[in-house]
Image 1 (cartoon, rainbow, N blue to C red):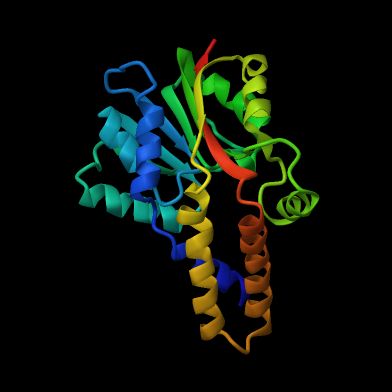
Image 2 (image 1 turned 60 degrees about the vertical axis):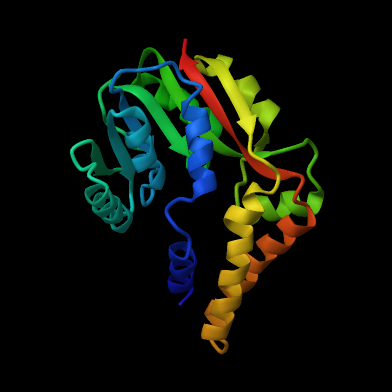
Length: 247
């Protein structure tokens, strides 16, 4: 039952949102103009950002993920948007990317780099990027140093154990072979409106749906703990975009 509940939580969220698309546009517009670039979207999920990148760039976009159900949804959405000729879904792990070296003008990771780790992602994905082309990463970050012990412990257990501050992420960029062109943190209320607030509503609905299922209740209690910790310390946790050029 727990896996089903987690899936229901995941499916309750849309593939993207107006605020998220606006942040993608802001990051994309910091890049120099490229004529029909070839883009790899790593950890694309259901592909909301993938489609936005296709619209923004007028280029070819490959969405890479390991969940075939998500990739099927991306393909359906691309067809509905008239983008099937420029969007391709590929089922592959970010730990096993076998595209040739220097295949892409832009590599993009929208909230997925935590799976492999910020530094490892930067180092391993560099070979995929053409010389002097670009990597854009949207990563979970601490918005200020020294997060409270309670929050740090909870995040290490259940959310993003490798979270760093914005400054710590930025400091890693040159040693990984990039020039940092720009970086910006999203507003402090972004994650409440985009994730934790809707998650709270979803938890409440699922408690009504599964009141006597012990496995479901356990999962929902774990998710509630994450919401409660964020609500207590919202000024510490957030995310930021890092726009980099291969040096």
